[in-house]
Amino acid sequence: MARPSTFSIVAVDRDRSTWGVAVQSKFIAVGAVVPWAAANVGAIATQAWANPRYGPEGLALLRQGSDAGEVVKRLIAPDPERSKRQVGIVDAKGRAAAHTGEECPEWAGHEIGDGFACQGNTLLSKEVVRAMARTYTATPGDLPERLLAALSAGQREGGDRRGMQSAALLVVRAGGGYGGANDRWIDLRVDDHPSPIEELKRLFRIYDLTLLTREDPATLVPITPEIAGVAQQHLRVLGFYTGRLNSSWDAATAAAFDRFLGESNFEAKARTDGKIWPSVLDHLQERAAREVARRTTTAPIQTGALSKGPGAAPSGGERSTPAKKRAPGP
Image (cartoon, rainbow, N blue to C red; front, side, top):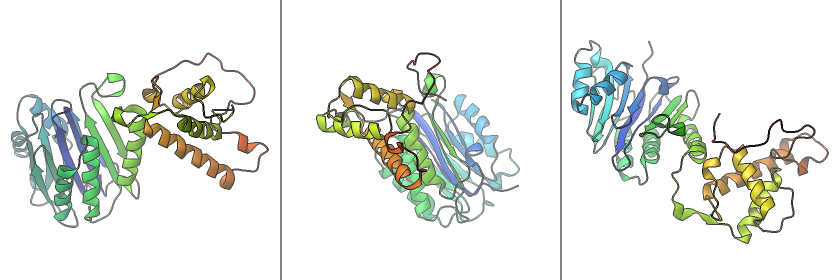
């Protein structure tokens, strides 16, 4: 059986009651094996010659009131393969603990800090977990940003000495999941990729824009005539707006922008106060730029192609039912 040669971090943001795990490995679909977490309970990473039972069994022990150190001891004590196991745990109160078996492939070890534990095996050197711990401690922001920063720092120090393949980010908070129906606030995986951490960060940016509300309201951009004009140009390129470029946030422009939000699953970013989230503006600009590049370099020659975009109404036919606003979803 292959070993998930891995480096990971488990951590808690006490102020926001959020727990999470970030992990990278030269192993297929590491997110299916290593990360476990439950809101108001804790987070666990089980790796090396991973024992997946450590996840649910460890969370059950945490729910019963055992602290992170006790759970580590109770998990490894009856395990005949404990010398090959590695596990990191942070509990509901932020107490952290870890175990690195003496038979874990070198370099293997862990570093524990206030509210977090970093661990890894088959690493280039001990500097991998040290860099993760330093970066996590020094990085401002909320838990997902700090977890991703720590993961990147570990990779910069060499990471898994066999290379990269997969990565995952799991962050939980009470009622944080889709529609408030579960606690999986962020649950992202990159199962096979040459640069899995960078791909994970890319996916997180899209997930953040689509489903989360993490942005500081102080960064909201007022819709000035200049902003309205820029938005009209981008919306026209994408086919959502067909009116005059008059730098006015009139009814036609607002309707085109609402269509763009709806078709992008960005309903959570809709506002009625004359302001726009900067992340939405950036995404609108990026999409328009990609569309221009597509038409000018890769699109087949087609009459009128430059006046059409992905937001344009289809030719022929009618909508089967009236359009209704909906929550973003699959």
